[in-house]
Length: 483
Image (cartoon, rainbow, N blue to C red; front, side, top):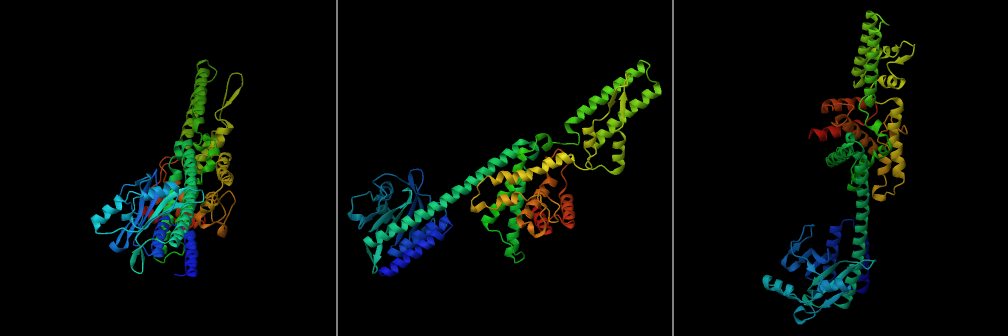
């Protein structure tokens, strides 16, 4: 190979190294390329791990021997960082070491290669060790090659080959460092996400598994889409990075709930903690009515009528407080109690129910008043605001956008921005399905009983018919859960 060909080869290698995204492929590439450039028979790559050089890839062509090339662990004890070992010396001093003949050198302890030769009928002759040093002068590992060949004969590694190997090792170290930095950034993002998820779920026992369930369901849908794509039944395909962005969005979708008051987050019934106020007030009124009767201020008929009125009010309040839905006839009964008052001997009036309690008891479905629901729904805007303050690297740049859209509906009836149609991305539609599915199936909500899976999906299919949810994603999740 002449100088021009060598230069072109090195340039192509540099391009290939910078383009490689898989660390295992990168390590395989450097060893195979180095062996090809020098025509050598064997190559070993070590990575520095806890002050020792760990065997990562081992290849001997003449013995058809390969280990670690598929990423599997090599169960050989790592080489300690002691100067008597050539690869360790290379790492310690960041220096390439070129040994023309192992058996005629006393510079290092070559008992290991010699023992290998004896056991395997091999003969190690020339050897070179090159450290992988990045731009921070950090040693990441060592590449060690044996038995360079020229015209079919084992020969020493030339100075030109050493220079090429040093360049190749340097480029590899930089590419490997970049991968490690990107991996560290991604791990940092995931650790932040885990911490935020823990903080959200720790605020209330009623939200303990919701975030994780939505993440699991979203990942299921992405995997199912890929299964269909492989069969030619779905155009969309999720890369690993795309799926990771979706799952992270699921983990972050409720981060805005950190600012929602606990008494709204945990409101189990319409009156919730105010029920005891109603019970105490009506009990006192009932006692006052009895006193009025005993002291002759009211007749026996009035006593019975007023006592019955108090008891009926308390029964109705108890009945509707935790009801899933209040129909018209029952609502009429509730409203009929709103004018009830107790009037004492001095003409002072005490309403059976306060205005706030009346408002709560008129909630048709759920446990939140319109004002409380507005506060609860504000968590989506707060999710957007919180996540806008966080830098998301390119691997997760879309996660905050999708997270802030998980309550939007295709027909524009969702919130906070009333997005609809094509303005609502695929990922937000998937998150909406996953979020609603867990809300319906959840077993830890104080304000509702968990629904059977068939009933939950029946409700979601109705939402599809209403134009709120994407039908195919509902069916995809159903198929996943059916498995």
